[in-house]
Image 1 (cartoon, rainbow, N blue to C red):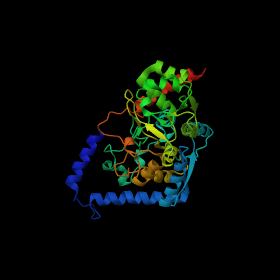
Image 2: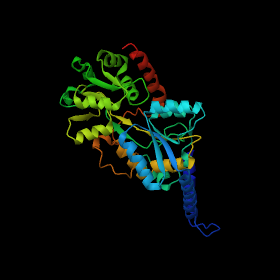
Image 3: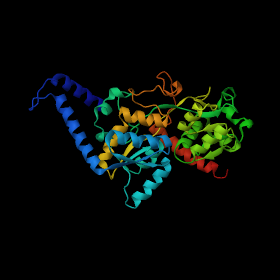
Image 4: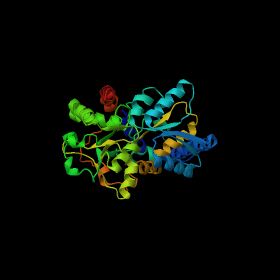
Amino acid sequence: MRRLVLALMAVMLASDALAQFPDGQTWQQTWQQTWQQTWEETLAAARTEGKVVVAGPPDTQVRLSLPAAFKARYGIAMEYVSARSTDAAARLRAERAAGIYAVDAALAGIQTMATVLYREKMLDPLRPLLIVPEVVDGSHWKRGELWFSDPEQQYVLRIFNTVNRAFTINTNEVKPQELRLARNLLDPKWKGRIAFMDPTVSGTGSNQAAQLYAQFGEDFIRRLFLDQKPMISRDRRQLTDALARGTHPIAFGAEDGELQRLRREGLPVTAMFALEDMRGSLSSGDEVGIFNRAPHPNAARIFVNWIASREGNQTFGQALGMVPARNDTDESGFVPQVIPRPDVDYFDPSSWEFTVTTKEQVRLHMKDLLRGR
Protein backbone atom coordinates (compact mmCIF):
# COMPACT_ATOMS: atom_id res chain seq x y z
CA MET A 1 0.00 0.00 0.00
CA ARG A 2 2.82 2.37 0.91
CA ARG A 3 4.51 1.72 -2.43
CA LEU A 4 1.26 2.47 -4.26
CA VAL A 5 0.95 5.78 -2.42
CA LEU A 6 4.55 6.65 -3.29
CA ALA A 7 3.93 5.79 -6.94
CA LEU A 8 0.85 8.01 -7.05
CA MET A 9 2.80 10.82 -5.45
CA ALA A 10 5.52 10.44 -8.11
CA VAL A 11 2.91 10.72 -10.87
CA MET A 12 1.44 13.82 -9.26
CA LEU A 13 4.86 15.40 -8.93
CA ALA A 14 5.70 14.68 -12.56
CA SER A 15 2.50 16.23 -13.85
CA ASP A 16 2.35 19.15 -11.44
CA ALA A 17 6.01 20.09 -11.17
CA LEU A 18 5.32 23.42 -12.82
CA ALA A 19 2.02 24.08 -11.09
CA GLN A 20 2.06 27.35 -9.23
CA PHE A 21 0.83 27.79 -5.69
CA PRO A 22 -0.87 31.02 -4.57
CA ASP A 23 2.45 32.52 -3.62
CA GLY A 24 3.87 31.79 -7.06
CA GLN A 25 6.05 28.90 -5.94
CA THR A 26 6.20 25.33 -7.20
CA TRP A 27 5.23 22.37 -5.01
CA GLN A 28 8.89 21.53 -4.48
CA GLN A 29 9.73 25.05 -3.36
CA THR A 30 6.82 25.14 -0.97
CA TRP A 31 7.77 21.75 0.51
CA GLN A 32 11.38 22.87 0.90
CA GLN A 33 10.31 25.94 2.83
CA THR A 34 7.87 23.93 4.95
CA TRP A 35 10.41 21.42 6.23
CA GLN A 36 13.02 24.11 6.74
CA GLN A 37 10.59 26.19 8.75
CA THR A 38 9.64 23.20 10.87
CA TRP A 39 13.31 22.37 11.37
CA GLU A 40 14.31 25.89 12.34
CA GLU A 41 11.41 26.18 14.79
CA THR A 42 12.29 22.80 16.31
CA LEU A 43 15.98 23.72 16.55
CA ALA A 44 15.16 27.00 18.30
CA ALA A 45 12.95 25.19 20.79
CA ALA A 46 15.62 22.52 21.29
CA ARG A 47 18.21 25.16 22.15
CA THR A 48 15.79 26.56 24.70
CA GLU A 49 15.41 23.08 26.23
CA GLY A 50 19.20 23.10 26.55
CA LYS A 51 20.08 19.43 26.15
CA VAL A 52 19.09 15.99 24.97
CA VAL A 53 19.48 12.87 27.11
CA VAL A 54 20.50 9.76 25.21
CA ALA A 55 20.86 6.23 26.58
CA GLY A 56 23.58 4.43 24.66
CA PRO A 57 26.16 1.65 24.76
CA PRO A 58 29.02 1.67 27.29
CA ASP A 59 31.61 2.18 24.58
CA THR A 60 34.25 4.75 25.48
CA GLN A 61 34.70 6.05 21.95
CA VAL A 62 30.95 6.44 21.42
CA ARG A 63 30.56 8.19 24.75
CA LEU A 64 33.22 10.71 23.74
CA SER A 65 32.41 11.13 20.05
CA LEU A 66 28.63 11.55 19.93
CA PRO A 67 28.17 14.38 22.48
CA ALA A 68 31.10 16.34 21.04
CA ALA A 69 29.93 16.06 17.43
CA PHE A 70 26.30 16.87 18.27
CA LYS A 71 27.28 19.89 20.35
CA ALA A 72 29.59 21.13 17.58
CA ARG A 73 26.82 20.83 14.98
CA TYR A 74 23.86 22.33 16.88
CA GLY A 75 25.18 23.95 20.05
CA ILE A 76 23.02 21.61 22.14
CA ALA A 77 24.51 19.56 24.95
CA MET A 78 24.06 15.79 24.91
CA GLU A 79 23.86 14.03 28.25
CA TYR A 80 25.01 10.55 27.36
CA VAL A 81 23.79 7.82 29.74
CA SER A 82 26.29 5.02 29.23
CA ALA A 83 25.15 1.51 30.17
CA ARG A 84 24.61 -1.95 28.75
CA SER A 85 21.20 -2.18 27.12
CA THR A 86 19.81 -4.57 29.72
CA ASP A 87 20.97 -2.39 32.62
CA ALA A 88 19.60 0.74 30.94
CA ALA A 89 16.28 -0.99 30.32
CA ALA A 90 15.97 -2.05 33.95
CA ARG A 91 16.70 1.50 35.08
CA LEU A 92 14.17 2.97 32.66
CA ARG A 93 11.53 0.51 33.77
CA ALA A 94 12.07 1.44 37.43
CA GLU A 95 12.07 5.18 36.74
CA ARG A 96 8.90 5.03 34.69
CA ALA A 97 7.16 3.01 37.37
CA ALA A 98 8.01 5.89 39.73
CA GLY A 99 6.69 8.49 37.26
CA ILE A 100 10.17 9.67 36.23
CA TYR A 101 10.78 10.35 32.53
CA ALA A 102 14.41 11.41 32.25
CA VAL A 103 15.65 10.06 28.91
CA ASP A 104 14.80 11.27 25.40
CA ALA A 105 16.23 8.71 23.00
CA ALA A 106 17.71 5.23 22.97
CA LEU A 107 20.60 3.65 21.10
CA ALA A 108 20.17 -0.01 21.94
CA GLY A 109 20.49 -3.49 20.52
CA ILE A 110 17.54 -5.04 18.74
CA GLN A 111 16.74 -7.45 21.58
CA THR A 112 16.34 -4.66 24.12
CA MET A 113 14.44 -2.56 21.61
CA ALA A 114 12.04 -5.38 20.69
CA THR A 115 11.49 -7.25 23.95
CA VAL A 116 11.62 -4.31 26.38
CA LEU A 117 11.26 -0.80 24.98
CA TYR A 118 8.82 -1.64 22.17
CA ARG A 119 6.95 -4.41 23.97
CA GLU A 120 6.45 -2.29 27.08
CA LYS A 121 5.28 0.67 24.98
CA MET A 122 8.06 3.06 26.03
CA LEU A 123 8.58 4.35 22.50
CA ASP A 124 6.88 6.98 20.35
CA PRO A 125 6.60 6.61 16.57
CA LEU A 126 9.88 7.77 15.11
CA ARG A 127 9.08 7.94 11.40
CA PRO A 128 6.88 11.10 11.60
CA LEU A 129 9.73 12.95 13.31
CA LEU A 130 12.21 12.40 10.48
CA ILE A 131 12.01 15.35 8.10
CA VAL A 132 15.52 16.22 6.90
CA PRO A 133 15.63 15.46 3.14
CA GLU A 134 18.91 13.51 3.26
CA VAL A 135 17.38 11.28 5.94
CA VAL A 136 13.99 10.54 4.39
CA ASP A 137 15.27 10.27 0.82
CA GLY A 138 15.59 6.54 0.18
CA SER A 139 18.31 7.06 -2.42
CA HIS A 140 20.76 7.71 0.44
CA TRP A 141 20.13 4.28 1.98
CA LYS A 142 21.48 0.94 0.76
CA ARG A 143 18.01 -0.61 0.95
CA GLY A 144 16.52 2.20 -1.08
CA GLU A 145 14.46 3.27 1.93
CA LEU A 146 14.62 3.80 5.68
CA TRP A 147 15.16 0.48 7.44
CA PHE A 148 12.63 0.15 10.24
CA SER A 149 12.87 -3.12 12.17
CA ASP A 150 9.50 -3.18 13.93
CA PRO A 151 6.32 -4.62 12.36
CA GLU A 152 4.65 -1.22 12.05
CA GLN A 153 7.72 0.28 10.38
CA GLN A 154 7.49 3.23 12.75
CA TYR A 155 9.38 2.80 16.00
CA VAL A 156 12.84 1.23 15.70
CA LEU A 157 15.24 2.47 13.03
CA ARG A 158 18.17 0.32 11.92
CA ILE A 159 21.11 2.47 10.84
CA PHE A 160 23.88 -0.15 10.65
CA ASN A 161 24.38 -3.37 8.74
CA THR A 162 27.69 -5.06 9.42
CA VAL A 163 29.09 -8.51 8.83
CA ASN A 164 29.52 -9.79 12.35
CA ARG A 165 32.61 -11.51 13.67
CA ALA A 166 31.81 -15.06 14.67
CA PHE A 167 34.60 -14.79 17.22
CA THR A 168 38.14 -13.48 17.61
CA ILE A 169 41.36 -15.41 18.19
CA ASN A 170 44.79 -14.65 19.57
CA THR A 171 47.02 -16.10 16.86
CA ASN A 172 49.91 -16.61 19.27
CA GLU A 173 47.79 -19.32 20.85
CA VAL A 174 45.37 -20.39 18.10
CA LYS A 175 45.96 -20.79 14.38
CA PRO A 176 43.02 -20.15 12.02
CA GLN A 177 43.46 -23.56 10.40
CA GLU A 178 42.77 -25.17 13.77
CA LEU A 179 39.22 -23.81 13.65
CA ARG A 180 37.89 -24.64 10.20
CA LEU A 181 34.64 -26.16 11.51
CA ALA A 182 32.34 -25.33 14.42
CA ARG A 183 32.98 -28.73 16.00
CA ASN A 184 36.67 -27.79 16.32
CA LEU A 185 35.58 -25.53 19.18
CA LEU A 186 34.71 -28.71 21.08
CA ASP A 187 38.28 -30.02 20.99
CA PRO A 188 39.45 -30.71 24.58
CA LYS A 189 42.52 -28.54 23.95
CA TRP A 190 40.26 -25.48 24.14
CA LYS A 191 38.60 -26.47 27.41
CA GLY A 192 38.66 -23.47 29.74
CA ARG A 193 40.18 -21.28 27.04
CA ILE A 194 37.06 -19.89 25.35
CA ALA A 195 35.31 -16.71 26.52
CA PHE A 196 31.69 -15.68 25.95
CA MET A 197 29.55 -12.71 26.72
CA ASP A 198 26.80 -13.83 29.08
CA PRO A 199 24.15 -15.56 26.94
CA THR A 200 21.48 -15.28 29.64
CA VAL A 201 20.96 -11.53 29.22
CA SER A 202 19.82 -9.60 26.17
CA GLY A 203 22.65 -8.48 23.98
CA THR A 204 25.73 -9.82 22.24
CA GLY A 205 25.97 -13.04 24.24
CA SER A 206 22.38 -14.12 23.72
CA ASN A 207 22.60 -13.17 20.03
CA GLN A 208 25.59 -15.43 19.50
CA ALA A 209 24.15 -18.30 21.55
CA ALA A 210 20.90 -18.12 19.58
CA GLN A 211 22.74 -18.28 16.27
CA LEU A 212 24.83 -21.26 17.40
CA TYR A 213 21.70 -22.99 18.69
CA ALA A 214 19.81 -22.34 15.45
CA GLN A 215 22.66 -23.65 13.31
CA PHE A 216 24.03 -26.54 15.38
CA GLY A 217 21.38 -27.56 17.91
CA GLU A 218 21.03 -28.46 21.57
CA ASP A 219 23.83 -31.02 21.87
CA PHE A 220 26.42 -28.63 20.45
CA ILE A 221 25.33 -25.88 22.85
CA ARG A 222 25.54 -28.20 25.86
CA ARG A 223 29.00 -29.42 24.95
CA LEU A 224 30.27 -25.90 24.23
CA PHE A 225 28.86 -24.15 27.29
CA LEU A 226 29.08 -26.98 29.82
CA ASP A 227 31.81 -29.43 28.82
CA GLN A 228 34.23 -26.77 27.52
CA LYS A 229 33.83 -24.67 30.68
CA PRO A 230 34.19 -21.26 28.99
CA MET A 231 34.67 -18.03 30.87
CA ILE A 232 31.37 -16.16 30.86
CA SER A 233 31.33 -12.44 31.53
CA ARG A 234 29.07 -9.42 31.21
CA ASP A 235 32.10 -7.15 30.79
CA ARG A 236 33.31 -6.90 27.20
CA ARG A 237 36.55 -5.29 28.32
CA GLN A 238 37.26 -8.34 30.50
CA LEU A 239 36.79 -10.63 27.50
CA THR A 240 39.02 -8.44 25.37
CA ASP A 241 41.77 -8.39 28.02
CA ALA A 242 41.63 -12.19 28.38
CA LEU A 243 41.93 -12.51 24.60
CA ALA A 244 44.89 -10.13 24.44
CA ARG A 245 46.71 -11.90 27.30
CA GLY A 246 46.10 -15.27 25.70
CA THR A 247 44.46 -16.83 28.74
CA HIS A 248 41.25 -17.18 26.70
CA PRO A 249 42.48 -16.97 23.11
CA ILE A 250 39.04 -17.64 21.59
CA ALA A 251 36.61 -14.86 22.45
CA PHE A 252 32.97 -14.44 21.46
CA GLY A 253 31.87 -10.83 21.97
CA ALA A 254 35.12 -8.93 22.53
CA GLU A 255 34.86 -5.16 22.26
CA ASP A 256 35.11 -3.94 18.65
CA GLY A 257 36.74 -0.59 19.31
CA GLU A 258 39.28 -2.09 21.67
CA LEU A 259 40.10 -4.85 19.19
CA GLN A 260 40.84 -2.24 16.54
CA ARG A 261 43.19 -0.50 18.94
CA LEU A 262 44.95 -3.78 19.80
CA ARG A 263 45.46 -4.55 16.12
CA ARG A 264 46.89 -1.09 15.47
CA GLU A 265 49.35 -1.71 18.30
CA GLY A 266 50.46 -4.93 16.64
CA LEU A 267 48.87 -7.44 19.01
CA PRO A 268 48.02 -10.74 17.28
CA VAL A 269 44.23 -10.70 17.29
CA THR A 270 42.33 -11.88 14.22
CA ALA A 271 38.60 -11.91 13.56
CA MET A 272 36.94 -15.09 12.31
CA PHE A 273 33.84 -14.12 10.31
CA ALA A 274 32.66 -17.57 9.27
CA LEU A 275 33.66 -21.23 9.28
CA GLU A 276 33.21 -23.85 6.60
CA ASP A 277 29.98 -24.99 8.24
CA MET A 278 28.97 -21.66 9.84
CA ARG A 279 27.39 -18.95 7.69
CA GLY A 280 28.50 -15.39 8.04
CA SER A 281 26.04 -13.30 10.00
CA LEU A 282 24.92 -9.69 10.12
CA SER A 283 24.63 -7.27 12.99
CA SER A 284 22.45 -4.19 13.27
CA GLY A 285 24.53 -2.80 16.13
CA ASP A 286 22.60 -0.26 18.19
CA GLU A 287 19.30 0.83 16.69
CA VAL A 288 17.47 4.11 17.29
CA GLY A 289 14.25 4.84 19.15
CA ILE A 290 12.64 7.88 20.76
CA PHE A 291 10.89 7.68 24.12
CA ASN A 292 7.35 8.78 24.73
CA ARG A 293 6.99 11.54 27.31
CA ALA A 294 10.52 12.67 26.43
CA PRO A 295 11.63 15.53 28.71
CA HIS A 296 13.29 17.38 25.80
CA PRO A 297 11.08 16.52 22.81
CA ASN A 298 12.46 19.12 20.43
CA ALA A 299 16.09 18.28 21.17
CA ALA A 300 15.16 14.61 20.80
CA ARG A 301 13.77 15.29 17.32
CA ILE A 302 16.94 17.10 16.32
CA PHE A 303 19.00 14.20 17.63
CA VAL A 304 17.18 11.41 15.79
CA ASN A 305 17.37 13.32 12.52
CA TRP A 306 21.09 13.89 13.09
CA ILE A 307 21.95 10.31 14.06
CA ALA A 308 20.24 9.10 10.85
CA SER A 309 22.01 11.72 8.72
CA ARG A 310 25.28 11.14 6.91
CA GLU A 311 27.28 12.96 9.59
CA GLY A 312 25.60 11.33 12.56
CA ASN A 313 25.54 7.84 11.07
CA GLN A 314 29.21 8.04 10.13
CA THR A 315 30.28 9.48 13.49
CA PHE A 316 28.43 6.74 15.38
CA GLY A 317 29.57 4.01 12.99
CA GLN A 318 33.25 4.93 13.19
CA ALA A 319 33.13 5.06 16.99
CA LEU A 320 31.25 1.78 17.32
CA GLY A 321 33.02 -0.07 14.52
CA MET A 322 29.76 -0.68 12.63
CA VAL A 323 29.13 -0.19 8.90
CA PRO A 324 26.42 2.44 8.24
CA ALA A 325 23.28 1.43 6.37
CA ARG A 326 23.58 4.63 4.36
CA ASN A 327 25.33 4.56 0.99
CA ASP A 328 26.98 7.98 1.21
CA THR A 329 29.37 7.47 4.14
CA ASP A 330 33.11 6.87 4.05
CA GLU A 331 33.77 3.14 4.52
CA SER A 332 37.51 3.29 3.85
CA GLY A 333 38.28 2.74 7.53
CA PHE A 334 36.57 -0.67 7.62
CA VAL A 335 38.21 -3.93 6.68
CA PRO A 336 36.47 -5.38 3.61
CA GLN A 337 35.20 -8.44 5.51
CA VAL A 338 32.76 -6.40 7.61
CA ILE A 339 31.04 -4.75 4.63
CA PRO A 340 28.12 -6.93 3.46
CA ARG A 341 28.35 -8.28 -0.06
CA PRO A 342 25.15 -8.43 -2.14
CA ASP A 343 26.03 -11.90 -3.47
CA VAL A 344 26.30 -13.56 -0.04
CA ASP A 345 23.39 -15.14 1.84
CA TYR A 346 24.06 -14.00 5.40
CA PHE A 347 22.32 -15.16 8.54
CA ASP A 348 20.60 -12.14 10.11
CA PRO A 349 20.03 -12.66 13.85
CA SER A 350 18.97 -8.99 14.09
CA SER A 351 15.73 -9.65 12.24
CA TRP A 352 12.63 -8.83 14.27
CA GLU A 353 11.04 -12.27 13.98
CA PHE A 354 14.19 -14.14 15.03
CA THR A 355 14.67 -11.71 17.91
CA VAL A 356 11.20 -12.03 19.46
CA THR A 357 10.93 -15.82 18.96
CA THR A 358 14.06 -17.97 18.70
CA LYS A 359 16.51 -15.54 20.29
CA GLU A 360 14.34 -14.93 23.34
CA GLN A 361 13.56 -18.63 23.75
CA VAL A 362 17.25 -19.53 23.60
CA ARG A 363 18.14 -16.81 26.11
CA LEU A 364 15.67 -18.23 28.63
CA HIS A 365 16.88 -21.75 27.89
CA MET A 366 20.48 -20.70 28.53
CA LYS A 367 19.50 -19.40 31.96
CA ASP A 368 18.23 -22.85 32.86
CA LEU A 369 21.17 -24.62 31.24
CA LEU A 370 23.82 -22.57 33.03
CA ARG A 371 22.09 -22.34 36.39
CA GLY A 372 23.94 -25.31 37.84
CA ARG A 373 27.18 -24.83 35.96
